[in-house]
Image (cartoon, rainbow, N blue to C red; front, side, top):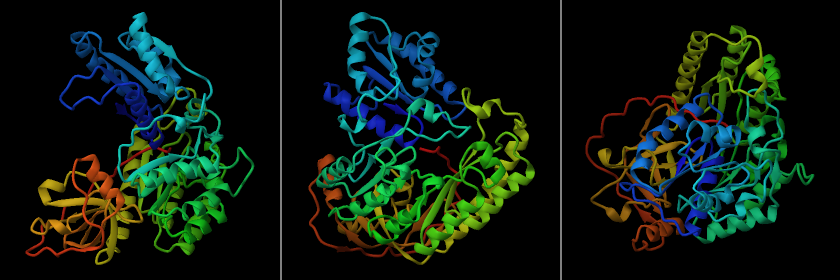
Length: 491
């Protein structure tokens, strides 16, 4: 399974894996040639097509050498390109869209029997995807889709035409799924939607999302609740109150800005202006002073002037984002923005992009340095970064979702947490995109998520209760160099 794009695609891939395992397939070993390769694609970025067709080209000789191997392409790019994929890569066996991921096992069987490519693209959703089998990638954290599709008409975005109109799940179904996940050991859920805080519009309840957050607070054993991505247009005071007043809703918010210029926002059809965005930031900070706010920003939208770009820099300075995912505008065929006048030269966009990244990195570093010396409770992860073996560190996320690499003491394995456990550490160093805690684990709170991780990996669970860690001794390691800016796209 190869997944590109947003969190919605990641969660769809969990469903595709669950469907295939339910149909009798097994996950291929890392060093084995698989019988089936599935690409779950994204269409948001300009290079999405090149990335897919390049990977398909690399697979052609592998498939030629292994008769019976099948290749399937799904996701947003499949929904957009449809039969074009088979025309350009005739060795592909199955093409399916965003609305019929449940068809994959049957399409693979049909392609094998009929010995010809199967292209099946539906124009609307057959059933809400959460009814499908799911193979969760994590024992301790889970995506929970509360809606699919989007009713917005942003001029730069192709997603609504590929994911369709917004469809909302009933609150009872969502809460039942969360309770079932908690019973399996999950301690963190992320509520997922293309425009997550518009939830409830389909059944006419404008406060449905804040009610859902409060209901999550009543689920025993659920330690952390997050959500992504909200839209400033729909971000209401009742949601801020629910975040601040529900203990297990984390003090973290990802809210896409896209541009700080009200003129550009109007051209983007973003339905809010600079003042509205900054007003939300002020209200969130007033209710939750320690909240970490992250955002998405597009540089070089058609017609963006130097004055418009300076307005974006102004919002970044005032908002003091913990992190910003920054993108150079990418023309996507089929979007209104692709036809706008004022497409900017690449060198102008690149220069503005570099100025924005430099400013945001400086702010991120300053904000992270404020946390040096503080204790942070991190949810321990098993796949965050590559510092573990080299530096005897583990990694995890704090309540504000900042990434923390922390030292463990190999002489006291009883104080070493498992993925899914909660560990209290003291921050000793800050970089723009992560924190380091090299003074040792102060406390470990074993969880059922840690037990679930043990069970997945064939290990005996640790005894329950709080374990006191032992601080490391000796000279600290040199501070790591600052990390470069990362990036992702809107959900």
